[in-house]
Length: 530
Image (cartoon, rainbow, N blue to C red):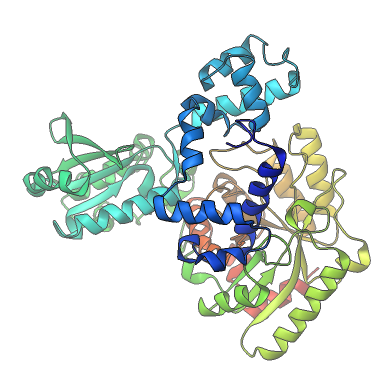
């Protein structure tokens, strides 16, 4: 905001440095720190400390409120457009007279942005793509965010009636990666109670039709509430897409639970996660799907050696508390300088620390790994003498993401064929609701991994969930193992493994086809297998 309003470069730099150091170094909430403790944070000057204190006391600070009052809402929204920094937004606002994202999109379509000094055709194309993507993604949320909403609503619902008398259905119940709206079924016996009390919990009901109401979480995200006289049948109906219902042909037989409904129709129970159109041909045969409890270890994680928030010891201890048998540290490689990628000396220093820590463990082991950047020609970071010292290498693309399929496939196939690549990280580089992945031929990638004994990662971060679950069944058929990895940069991020388990089940993944359900002995055998 300071840069947008023409603040001097020293002030802007001070804020940027402070923001970087707070994100990278501080895990304690700022509002719990005293003024003296704030002053001890590196590269946080007296002025910034004053702003933080003011923020803690007032919830904002005066200079920000003043700048915000002078800025059109649409201009603030432009700051979130990929490819536009504050200086470019300032030009768009002041020199082009554009004050909304819609006006900016129209200017791009008329080629006006490309013809404005400081931009050009490439920037214009990037801005158009970013705006159009955000419009498509508008009003959608990640499943993890939907889950937090549901848990908050459940805490209130459980005070009104029994948990057996309501059921979440739709995309949330099927654990879809992206949720466009929540759907709630309630036993119609509680209709009067719900209508009287939902307003008191911040969810006033607005009638759409008989027994169907709409409300909004925090006044924004839609929740459809239906009252049902047959909760079990309607649960099945509103979880299951019509194409799946046509395939299953369940008869409407009175049942106490959904599981009993399937059984009384002579069918094995099909979990909600599997009930997707893509799974019609094999979902009836899917058995023993992976559970969070199946994980024995956690690989692909970051520490303070690169861009993580916690030390190697802290991350390992968090894994031990979770009763896992091993931890794979996979900090960024040297080319990823923006993420504090490890120089060769750093790698050796980390290996030495791992050896020292492992000497003190009896039932736990840290494995030496790296998340090696896949370079522009598909080669890996580091010379061979360093690569061969790792227990395993996770190979990922982080740079030059704007590729056509030919370029992306060249890089990926070359990396897969590298003898030191053991796990292929976040396959398409996508960030759900933020950017599409680069285009690839999944079948050829899976075949190459099968031929080279390379595991494919399902990155469990709720913004990634990459590889996409729709290709997991194909990988299983080809004998390719999947590794569900949190890509954790903080101890709490280790728990993202649950989100990976959810979407892996959608693809039919079993514990037998997952790398990190192996115990530590079997995992070491996998390391030695190539």
